[in-house]
Length: 280
Image (cartoon, rainbow, N blue to C red; front, top):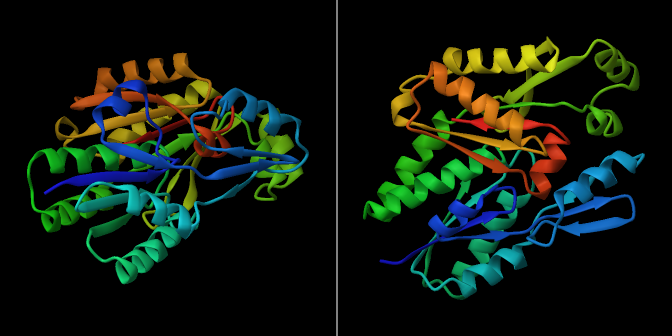
């Protein structure tokens, strides 16, 4: 049996993973003021960061259409297609993929298609895609792959630290007054997912260094059996910070591997300049 992996463009990759995974990314679009950007290889994340800083309004994102997914389903030269999307609580990408699956099977119907709601974003989508590739390479039946991948998603944990609160203030999710107070007090929120695909605030910590130390502690509080797991780090213009975080995690936990990737467009919107996202 042949398999193909698809994901929306919130699945952040590095060069090594691009070669390792048999995966195609379907781009979302980003609008910042009068600028419309397609989240594909042509997007410059640093240009996006500058546009967001200069814009008085929050960036807006649009998910791939059902037609975009349909086109990829038709193009895939495989009997079985697995799709990984952004959390359905954050984006319409999952619903678009599900509608495309329904339309495709009604019109053509000669492929097995399963759409996975990541219940997260960014590096979590990356890890799910890596797990799917591992299961495919293990020659498992498609039903077993779906079952094991769903179990993996149910146990996956995601956390991120924001250096900039600008987008939260511009989007009205944080009042200007609270944003000014947080900046004045150098408060760095540690955010995470609530197990249902929504974003929640985990803790507020004074200073970036303390926030990162606390993040390393949270890994121990929230996780177990690290020797069987891969931890992923995605960063927005913060490679040295991500590398230092990796070193601190390695000192305390015996993860099977730790990978670092740079955020593409959609994850850059979430993390903003200096933000770091982890999943394990």
